[in-house]
Length: 149
Image (cartoon, rainbow, N blue to C red; front, side, top):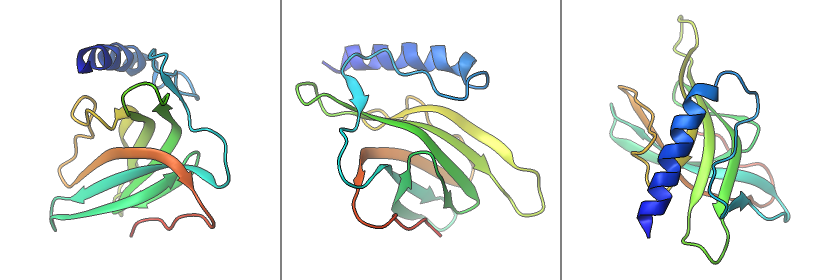
């Protein structure tokens, strides 16, 4: 059952790698079961987990779709967040753009692409200090969730 998801993910990752810089809106994965989070009250957010490898601390935080969120020196922007239809196995997929803003240095784009909650190693952030992974896509209720750090 996971093989079709992995094959679709690989095809999407290969296809989006070339198109990432040319298009302002990310192309949607080819999986027909993926859809935006159903409308409801609140804001569409991606629940992310960050690991600071220096301090060995993990932190869960919410990143609103379309807004930049900070984690350490990283600026994380979620362009889109999709979930599987209820009949399909659970899956959350987010298109992330991650930029490192080290003090005194020029901003460096580290990652731009789809991250899959079920297979975080498929397309992962490669950074010496931080790891970031997608946990889920959901609706945040009430006021906007606090940024990390």
